[in-house]
Amino acid sequence: MERNSRKTIKNTKAGAVLCPVCCVECIKVRFDCEIDGIEIQDVEALRCPKCEEEKFSPEQIEKIIEKIKIKQDQK
Ligand SMILES: [Zn+2]
Image (tube, rainbow, N blue to C red; front, top):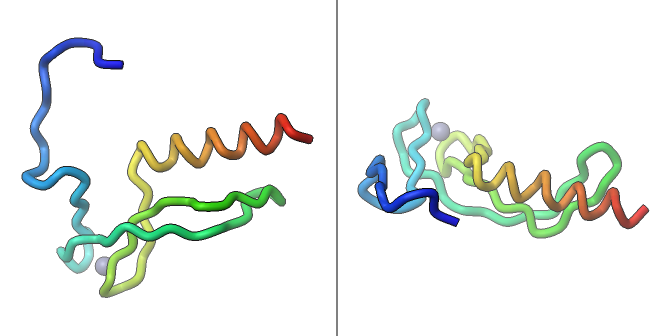
């Protein structure tokens, strides 16, 4: 859902996130993880290829929260 047609242009490449430490582009990774005893599959994150720090974009965090909610409802 788009609130209005105005768009903010932040990055030249869509979804490109730079590691603030290494200034290299983070790569998209997918993995399974466990948060609060809830197993979540296919979690998307961004990982710096240099320092291997994992970062989450606000959109990715939203998706994780959604997945946790679905799992909690199944209980
Ligand atoms: Zn880094």
